[in-house]
Image 1 (cartoon, helix red, strand yellow):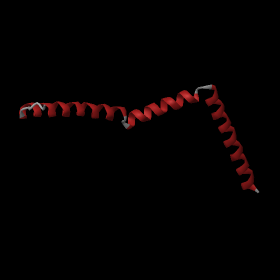
Image 2 (spheres, rainbow, N blue to C red; image 1 turned 135 degrees about the horizontal axis):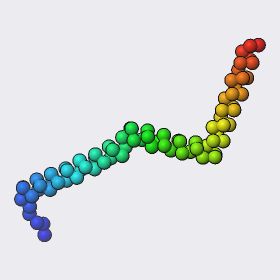
Image 3 (tube, rainbow, N blue to C red; image 1 turned 90 degrees about the vertical axis):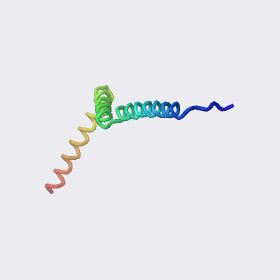
Image 4 (cartoon, rainbow, N blue to C red; image 1 turned 60 degrees about the vertical axis):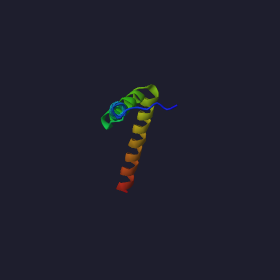
Length: 78
């Protein structure tokens, strides 16, 4: 058995649903905002780089880049 609702009740329900949707959209925009994502990525990278493995990877990368630069300088002088 369907319960009949007045137009005013339906309008009020629609308005309430619209308000709830607006709050949800605002929360999603805040959670997925570019500034927040960038800050979270920076924090994650800093945390990983400060670990012993991260320090070793950065050090190894620096050594590799140094060796490649030296090699290219030697080859360019020949």
